[in-house]
Image (tube, rainbow, N blue to C red):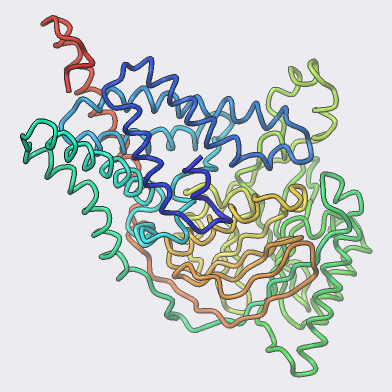
Length: 501
């Protein structure tokens, strides 16, 4: 529960430290079976409240099933931590095991589910600059290491008072487990900057709102499109009156035009009129059918030339945008298959639109949780990142705030301005240092216009990519291997594994 409370919309990210301190206290020196059970309970206590939004509209079944599966990873991590807790400098090995568990959870099953990475709860924390060093794995590792280190410091103090003996090596290792992550975070601040490197761009973020929340928000798809066109035209009137600066380009959210503008002349006319009114290119979130396949697509719409470029979402959401095990689920409950009648197909190329000379990277909604999806837009030349999203299906839950925090971490990770256009809120403009400079409310029509810096330099996290995560996984595997050897040797010598610490 402490770890859950450390996540947005609350701003008490530091609670993650006592959360892992208590977890270390529970697991250290236990058997792997106890670690498995306690780890599963920890996973349930964290993920049940964190992911409750997944059942807002579809009931508790999918929510409970998702948490039950995801908590298995935490259970395995708990078992691993009990093993490495017998090693010298165990907080280091234990933190690496946690990150290895997150790495596995982000990849399987069905393409993975990274939601709930420790790093995503640190948008307001002192450790945030470490995202620029090695991305979410390094940021999360520092937090977990510091938490385990805090417990080890307390344990060393208590043990020293009880026995009168201070083990200097162990005490020094415990102190370093706390001091090094904090010192690293302070040193990493030099990597965080919001200065323009390639000039600036004036961007408009449109939140048109929806007729109703819930799964049936898109039953009035034309109304959603009209709302976003209307808000764009309202902004155009303010620009014409001199109340607002003219934007260089405009960003609409995901699902802002679920009426396919390539096959529906009315939808095309609505978008065309909005683009002409504002006099700037628009990135439109559409649902498009092409060659018999369905795509969640961003469309670059020029006010003169019409549609010029497209980006198809690459990381589509299982059970939301496509249905794994469709025949099996249909045999259990036909209502489940009716909610996802046709699977979305995946795109295969990063989306970077050239909009009035600016290179805008597209990361559609769910993709923001995946390290590779965000990084690929930056390595493909993005000077600014946009995360068009649709949160209308999750009502007023914490989901939108959790996703907003992810975007703040991504801004620091890659040193880019991040815009978050959302159908129903919260939309925002985020600076490359992670600060939110503008934001909307929920379920209101609104627009945000701001001059933002364009940047092209790459952070160490961008350059290194997957390497920091793989290194931490290797550390975890090495620690588990060492611990396994130690336990086996202890059994041969007649020692009790729990006493090997």
